[in-house]
Length: 401
Image 1 (cartoon, rainbow, N blue to C red):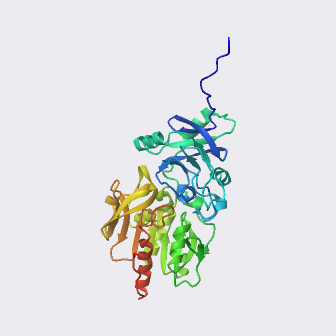
Image 2 (cartoon, one colour):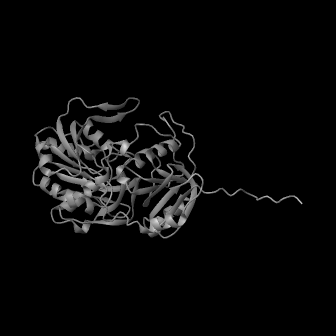
Image 3 (cartoon, one colour):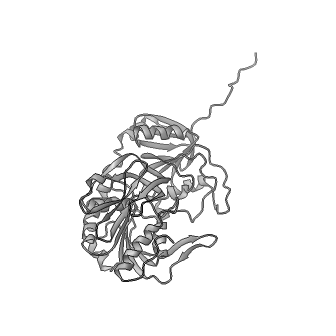
């Protein structure tokens, strides 16, 4: 009698995502081997996976991409967002639905799998990312371990215990892990089609950017509007910043719990607010400005991660589609008198912007630099520059060019 054969071959999983509640999700491994413990979130962007994975705001997180086809435009040296690629600040893990295919794009200089290996990002493909997204929406962002072993051999008990034991992002100051090691001057200007990035020649103003995990395109947009940008580490004191004689101060995006970073950052911001120097904050910088003004922040259930979020600007009455990446939010009800809510999410009504009444100070939760994402909010950089120009008695720029 002929030997019976199985109707299909069962592929041995080479990667696991083990959630803190013991759930085990099996898939195919790619990228770096080994394991990483982090919080799992989902991102709804259709493009920009390199910019997402290199955004320092994703430190301590595993990004699940809801768009099924990730990696088909390859990778290149221009689409990264962390200041020091050697430090590999950004997401520690990535989850995809479809297997990564060979790149097909004229800008591609390499494939995603090899790039993930160089970045040290552990990745997994071949799972139902819709089901994982639904789980996060229902239960919140879980702590987890992502593991990749080409031989498919895992110590499952160890992975489960590590996932369950990790304390999570609450109370965790990650800005100190991703910030610049020393001060530097940024001169690169925004990318132009078929020309690449430019270099600033003659700046007309000086902006000091406090780096809590800043993204490159934020600095490019400031430089493109005429600002000499001095980037300083997150722990830089107010006296040192003011000694640089800035025309404006920028509070950058970054990862982790804003209250933890605020232990040392908030007193500095409060000192800076005693001056009349214009201040602009984004993401973590927005949250810490709110803390410095007397507000509170709170952990979100599922966070906002994607490039298709509708936000209303109360100062103009207009709605824009923006890029978001945050798991903490400012509690609008905690904002004291004299602090105006300027932007609000139309998904859930959460706070997305504040301004200090009668002062040149404002911030937003979303990412107006649009890397990745739509450019609806680019005007905010002009709004900041106009505060500097107004103080100096100069002609204002049109907010929307």
